[in-house]
Length: 353
Image 1 (cartoon, one colour):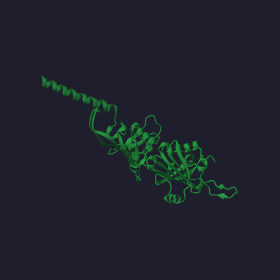
Image 2: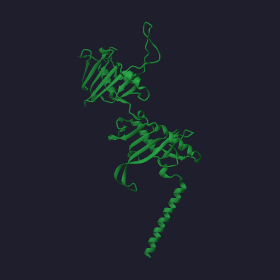
Image 3: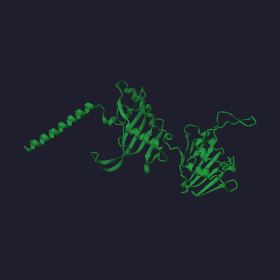
Image 4: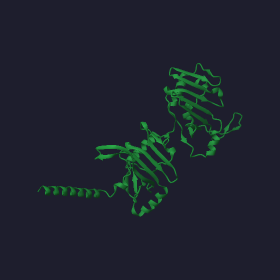
């Protein structure tokens, strides 16, 4: 009797499992292993690798303090990373690619698709997602991102090792997500040049090679003890505008460039510009002794300039300039509107301009 009872229980469990499988398959024709492109727990993502067919590669990696690095070296844009992680969480399959178009889509993806690898902290032992033990870093997803559908509302994606591509979208979002999977390093880089609050500044030196009499240096002992020295005669400047000086020093908390130019401009041109005499040189030293030097160069404009006597002068861009930042590693475009805050002349600080 007991043996029959055990047999009945086992049969009931098998029947229940079969019914569950049938019901599940009746609601969806998608195989989860080849159609689940989203990441439910983005907080567990530690590394993302993106590569394309043009040998562009980007590695995004979570570091200490929940910050992210690009290619293990450069700070990443916080907003861009947050938006991308949300994309990884929100994407859903809209439909499989129609059978008639499948071969064409796969052929096209073989030429232009970007490869995506996602690594997460995953437990070696996971009991019903309630007990998670022995976490380790694991490659959890590898898939390919193709181009967009004809209606511009979906993106073709293919799981690594699968033969069936899918059309993926974000519900409620009109557009496609393929551009969010950028393999260009510059798209992920943080554009910050200076991010030092005034209480962390030890000194700021501003040099004007073409106007040496306007060059100066601030030495900051504390907020109540700031000295201004002229670099032309190495003398302490008395009677400068205190509010202008404080506003100047406070501006170093957030100064950014507009764009990276290495991949947009020929190296010969960059070498030519950086070999010339800078218009302005800014050197900030923080209280830990770290030095951040920026060299600013004039940029040619398109509209001609005229001297007071009517003579034609070399046209200069009045809105933007070039700069060398990050220990002279990056050649960037900056806006005068932003950098005017930290390129005041000595006469300006004295209230003479």
